[in-house]
Image 1 (cartoon, helix red, strand yellow):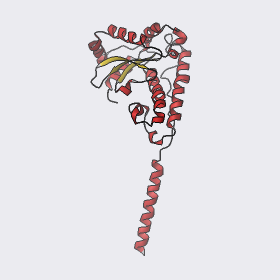
Image 2: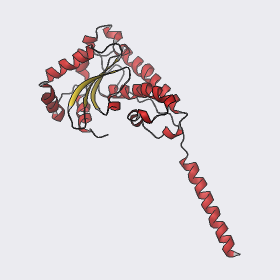
Image 3: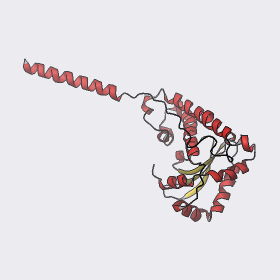
Image 4: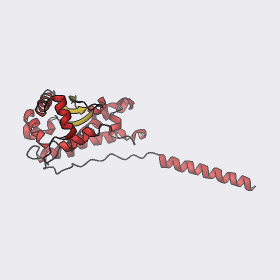
Length: 232
């Protein structure tokens, strides 16, 4: 009798333990939060005005994030995945949300990268990144000219990036819309947003001036960090 009670007791504990574990492991939906700017809205003036930064961060970036959160809400298996993980494995996504994640997840990732690669504090290109730029482009001026030329050749909305492959070799690429280099297995070092909402209030259709001014607020310390951290 005692043996039967012991078996029953152990069985009850086993069942309760598994049910509890099941509940504990059940994924809960937690929307990804809007990342605040790392500086004040007016901190990048006169190169980028306050109104542009407010609209860019609070409206455009937020819109991408809201649409991403709404898309992911119905897929518990994806709750624990970062946006980076999802964008680097787009073919792993359910077909019905592939485009939404590609566009809006890309919009979130790209904008967070863009905001972080700018700073109101003056920084200087140095270290291993400087050596790599000179080695791969001949000089910083050559790099800057090539970057500007690529940016001016982007038709419509998109981005220009300085990227590195796994070997540390640098190149300049452009992407359309909110496509991101990470989907191509490339590591972004710096990137400029060429959508009109990023510059039109101050520069109108003068994209060239926007690009030139933008070089004054690049966070080269962050760029050097990005170059060092090639392995995600």
